[in-house]
Image (cartoon, rainbow, N blue to C red; front, side, top):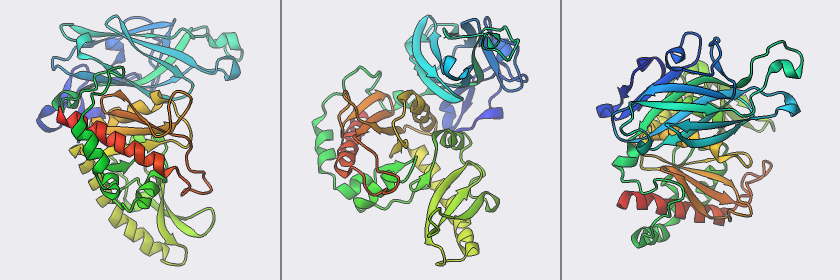
Length: 403
């Protein structure tokens, strides 16, 4: 399990976890942070919790790590936007002279990208340039006399090594590399009984759909987030904190569902809401609260153990179509615990057929269904498409382990 925040000394790399497997470097852009020592050109004076990029080009220089690995860079940021006249800003990321990412940022968000070792090897530093071609002056939009040319406000940058990619002989080095045909993996994935197949997966949300898919396939795994509402920003925050503070008596509240027929459990620590599967009147509020105070810490420990083990495929889907760049930080977050794979379920379109799976990066798969279950009927999901996706994702997972 990994740690964040104050555990990492500023301005130098830190080793964390078993045998120092996780290498991290953190940049804090707040007024009391370390970004000023690392910034060169194109930055405003740091504010309480963030620093604005300015002039369309901003640069940082970080010490280069010495351990060979692909490195993940996770950015917490928000754009300077003004309603319809400037609804979003583009952000390009250039590392040691090569552009590695191009994002569109419309709100406070988290974005992530991978830095291959070939860009770092032999370099004394990681020189990062952020390009913001849509930078604008607040004064030009009225209501302010601020003449600065503002791009993106950065609050944090986390850089860490993905050593699992090397350790597990991961064959997916980049998204345009075809996945080799492995006949043994195909046979195993096709022949595993459906109930057993579904136990290879664990839901991270955002809602109950995959948990109900597992139930339809007669698989009933214990899972902290299986029947929870887990919006992505809140899920990322929980993973970053290691779920610390969830499941305490003071952070669990029993509520009545909107239809008045069942109890719901509200987690005030991270803002999750999940089904208790207890009808109102079937149990007292006090007894249900006591049950959850016993149950939730156990499920947290189990999830953390599963993340450390890296044997399951973790599943996440939104309430509607989502941009892959929004979800990629989740794949990076769970790989900080262990050699995990995220299966992100998105809506099919003209170029992505229902029931198919594509590899986007080591540990990041995207599967497609033609529709999600409607809110008013959560059991009305596309079971056949889900099953095809899970078999294909499991085959990919087997392939990475057999190289």
